[in-house]
Image: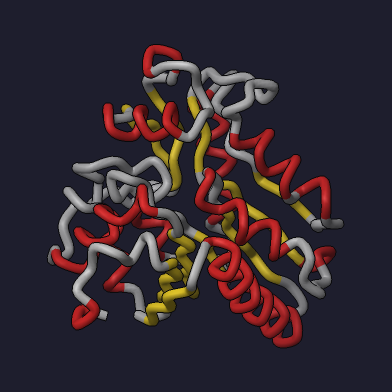
Length: 246
């Protein structure tokens, strides 16, 4: 694990995007294409904004989406499909995108997504960490045992509260009860994982990440087992961690 601490979210986003772009370009040079996983949420704003400005041949990139709420229209402000289209997909000439769709026949959609993501390895995954230390929508206690690629999960109260605090929903009752998420197992199949985790709101989760052993009650801890993992923090998100732990 490599830990990078930047001054603020803007510098963090630029640094994480630079590393991601280097990996993408190396893989394109090596094999002519890249398979990429992108996460969403307020903590990813700066990284994605910086990434779309990098010199990358996006026509060689295939992207997979991490998660989406069950039953939420793409037109809803909180839709992650809407998020990715507005901030990424519509801004670069990407070769192919596989969105998570929480509407319609969920079982059929999960089967299609699973089939597509398992065709070839994922080169790079950008995976955020939630205030409750979730990765994707794998809230604590996360399922570390399933070998499925995507599953439907029930969202916990802390996760819902984060969505409200970030302004995606007007109140906790408006947050859907369930979501589709890429599983912990599938995330860990990625060859390289980068986590962008800025802001004071994430400080407690980051403290738990460093202080706890690998445990499904702090789902992000599982990423400490990954051989090619880079964690990008800013001064605020790293503020509660003993520097000796880095």
